[in-house]
Image 1 (cartoon, helix red, strand yellow):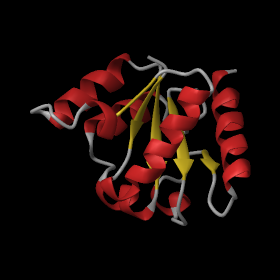
Image 2: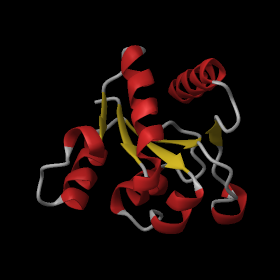
Image 3: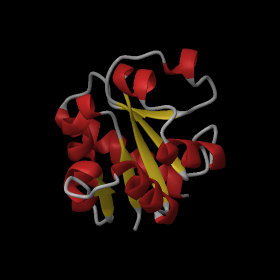
Image 4: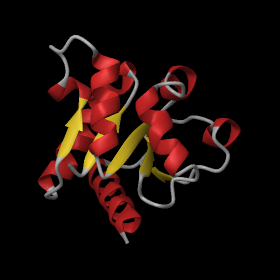
Length: 132
C-alpha cells in the first residue's frame, strides 16, 4: 500500500479528498473512514496498517495538532521521518495552523487557500517530490 492517511475527525472531508486525488493518480490508499469504521480496535488497526504503508500522510489542522500528535500511527511515521523529508511522513496542511510552533522541523505540503485545481496540483507535486 502506498499511503495511509491519518487525520482528526474534524478533517474527514479533507482526508477523503486527499485519498480520492491520490487514487485518481494511481496510488493505493487506506484511511479510517473508508476502511476501519466497522472494526473493533480502531487505533490498533490504524497502527498496524501504518506500519505496512510505504508512507503516512498526516492531515494538518488545528484539530490534528491539538489532539492527534500522541496517536501511534502518527508517532511511528514521525519517528522514522521527523522532518517529513524522507517520504515516510508526508504532512499536508489543510487549514491555517501553527505547524512551526508545534512541529518546527516538519516540512509540509500546503494547500491552504488554494482553489481546487491548484490544491490538487500542489498535493500531487508534493507527493511526487517525497518519492524522489
